[in-house]
Length: 72
Image (cartoon, rainbow, N blue to C red; front, side, top):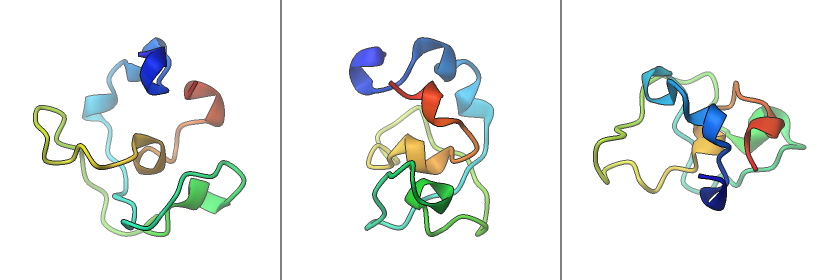
């Protein structure tokens, strides 16, 4: 998974966690509040991991409660 920018240990139980879908124009930036996710604080939901419906979502923006060190 490191090839995809995700440390293997970070993946554990992620499918069960809720997060915030980012705005389509949001770009991940660890220096910005909420890593650049302008939708933070809106409705929490889960990503559909079993299909391609949510494949466009940058999970670093979706799971903003994770730390920068959990991504590779």
